[in-house]
Image (cartoon, rainbow, N blue to C red; front, side, top):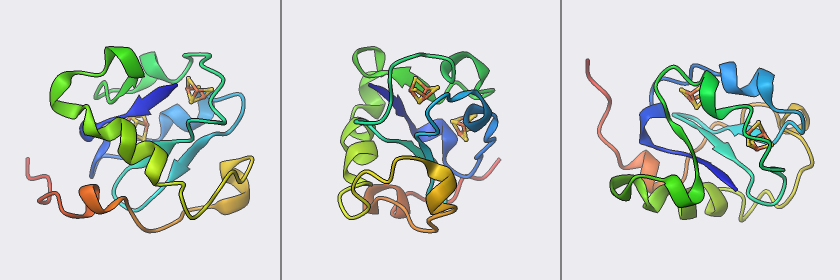
Length: 105
Ligand code: F3S
Ligand code: F3S
């Protein structure tokens, strides 16, 4: 599956959403998450992210390896909604993301 990593936090460019043919990129609060069971590995989202936050799981840089579990665990309560348009903005994050300091640039 594809995974969204730390560069998305507090950026949420969202142009990835428009590329996904199965609408499996969901909006938390500070970042977006890819549903590991709904993603069909088409790869269309990866090149459009301006901050290079999206990786195929085996290509995920080591410092962001925890984001693979974070993307999956984000859906532990949501299950498999079958499309982000149905859920809309979820408004909360995986605890690991909530705990990150605000991005200051
Ligand atoms: Fe985030 Fe990049 Fe999508 S910043 S919202 S993963 S385009
Ligand atoms: Fe969608 Fe990206 Fe997967 S476009 S199907 S989340 S590889």
